[in-house]
Image (tube, rainbow, N blue to C red; front, side):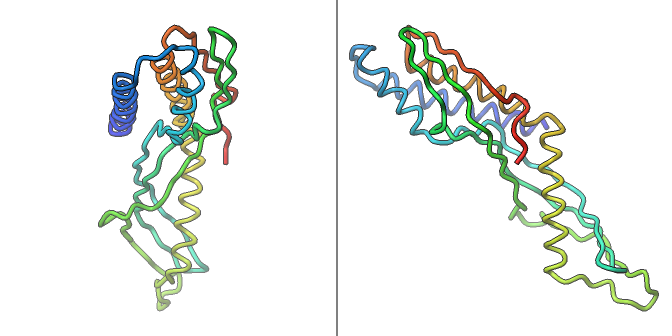
Length: 192
């Protein structure tokens, strides 16, 4: 979990740094004329990655009387599509609504990310071999259960909270003098 926190903090810092450099290098024009353009620039960043996920999960399954126990490493992220931000400019206030999250989980491609611990057959002389297709079905089920676990562990809730703060700071830095209010209509997230 500490790794996830560190990666999330680094991602937020990188985005804040990029916005700071962009503001520092941007020409000094009237704020009123630039507001719409700066909002569009934030939208064009497209994806805000609020949290990176790296998790090892067990894979337990069976096909008939053949069983398998394995360890699977997952990588992924919780992202927000900034093009889907609902932005309402009300004079000196900018009202923003956070879009739905996208939870991406996949099997890691790093060496050793999938390790079979044991296979067996309930029949004494039966083969414990499981086909690649059967193994992939078990992995897919394990990944789907891990996705549900991300919601139940509160990771999506935390990612959404951090995204609200990130969007608020991005827009506040881009639009000095405007009050930015970011709301989250689904703080628990929408299960996919």
